[in-house]
Image (cartoon, rainbow, N blue to C red; front, side, top):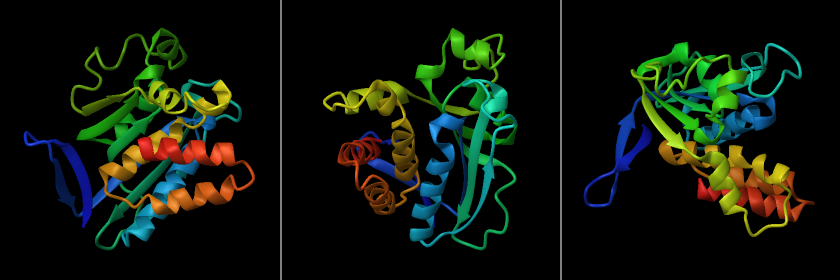
Length: 218
């Protein structure tokens, strides 16, 4: 069964709900690493022996300005304990790195589904780039969804505050925090992603250790 962790109960324990299937969509700018994040979630799901189907979704415009709707990159994963033949008609969890990543795919999210947002990008500049007149958290746009607000950028910077990485390198690691959250929510194994990070950054131990640390923090 596919499992998703719910909020902590009164006794401090984490409740777990078994689901026969689920669809997750990671969405953000091309520079946010959503294709990589989705592929690593897919690998972990395969290791969990779930059947699955994926749908990579590339930006409508090459090198579109960051934060704009036509620069959104997505990766959708539909997985379950039974036969899975399609990438999923509707999304149960949307992981959105900025306002545009909420605006573009929101119509695919199931009513009552979860929208996990990077609140650090939800500001006046982000709304303007996404051509939004107001904060979707406040104008009723997200009233039919369960909204989970996470300061992905801030938490990533805090996790790597003791490293010598540049601000750009640190910020590019926030997708690993998002991946860690998704793996935890659906009880997916972390080892495949840790191994992949080790292989990819074998000659860059500072980046290897940083990405592994952020993944675990998520």
